[in-house]
Amino acid sequence: MANGSNYSLDFEKPIKELEKRIEEIRIFAEEKQIDMSEEIQRIEAKAQHLRKEIYRSLTPWQKVQIARHPKRPTFLEYIDLIFTAFVELHGDRLFRDDPALVGGLAYFEEIPVTILGQQKGRDTKENIYRNFGMPHPEGYRKAIRLMKQAEKFGRPVITFVDVAGAFPGKEAEERGQGEAVAKAIMEMAALTVPTIVVVTGEGGSGGALAIGTGDRVLMLEHAYYSVISPEGCASILWKNAAEAPKAAEVLQLTADDLLALKVIDEIIPEPLGGAHTDLERTAAAIKKSLRKNLRELMAIDVKDLLELRYHKFRGIGRYVEE
Image (cartoon, rainbow, N blue to C red):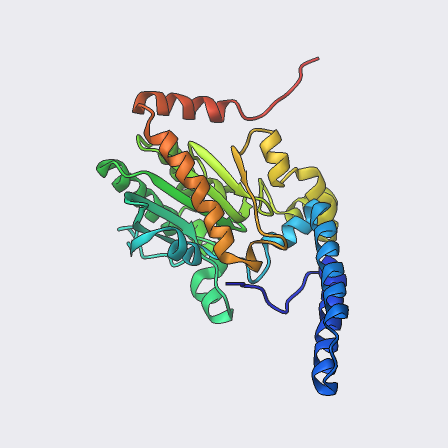
């Protein structure tokens, strides 16, 4: 099932113009009852070639735009295609339930797991309900509760990251946003069960790291993962958010950059045009990667698992002394 839309990014406009031309020819051919299939095939081939050329040489800023595409698949959409028997669990047992962070129990190919992920909305009403996918402290405290529950019953933890950042509002700060994020990182780092992180869209700052401390960190081809958004970085460094494309270059936030820096462990390929063009193929690719990595991690002794996780994160970052 294709999951695209008429929405197009700036760099996709040449492709959209060709697709519009194809549709005009089809309508004309039907009206005049003329066979123009050869002409249509020629333009379709040209559009496909152009799409390949564009997506072969995307800039970091263009990848950020794809990661933010309004039709990019959400966590709940992936759940239906990757897991079975999902039961959502609510509340942090301290303040309230946070709809921006969804979590619960499910089966991954007969293996009971705990799954967590930020959930964005599809329209204005849902985005307001989900707070645009930006969790409050209670969202991360819910995540901690479910991760500790998973540890108690020996269930692997799988998290899906797609967040611009933890919610920075006054009420979130009043309820301890910084502490909640820090504790989530600490607790996840010490879990005695296998943990896998999948960065599916935006991976913004502490909002992503709070559920991002995994034994394996996987990342979709056109997602991004960064200490700060390009706009935030540009506002700090150049006092101008319009410099975001320049910031995206220096932040090294793409999957290729992060694999080279050993921040992530694997890149999951997306369909040509991005994950939103074919949800089923994207979910199948994620499922294949999860299957391989989960089997490997479940075969490792707990003591060794914790040791490997410690060295994995201690090994991130390089510097040179002169």
